[in-house]
Length: 203
View 1 (cartoon, rainbow, N blue to C red):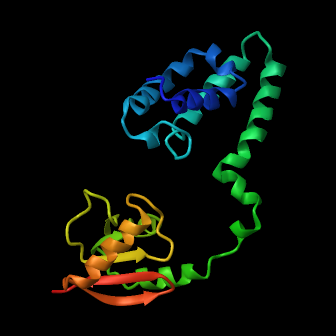
View 2 (view 1 turned 135 degrees about the horizontal axis):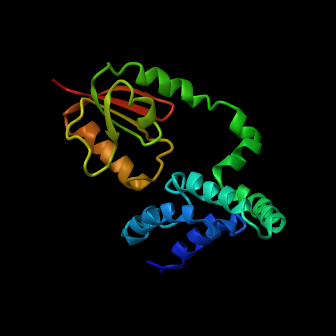
């Protein structure tokens, strides 16, 4: 539960943004179950702060922080520490991307991706690259391309072969799996544009 160091660093990061004042509030106990299941897992992605798994904890932590601020104690110190830690940590997290000029420019490949996804009919079963999945969830039965428990033989496959994300499989495995789907005779290539490949299962 406490090793490797990633777990301790996660707890440190979570508490430090409140100037450690949240530990004075009983509301903090509401965060314990989430931390327990994350740290007990053998999935290393759950241990750190690199993904979204701490998002559910932040309202709990800041509710505890506000509760603690109403109690007697070093309020000014805690607020200053919270602000300082937040400023120091911000460049390590996605919110910092709002300060980068590239964030405000649309990737020209995005228009191609949208055009190809529009060719997939509503209600179809689809295996898609991880970044494309959220854009298909509202109208298709979609799973992540390469994920072990994906739906077998989806009707459509759309993959970003130019910039594979590296999850759930490596870029090399992504390209290998895509090549296998294209060459096994079960799928036909509908489009191959700007690195996006759209395959349709043969009848």
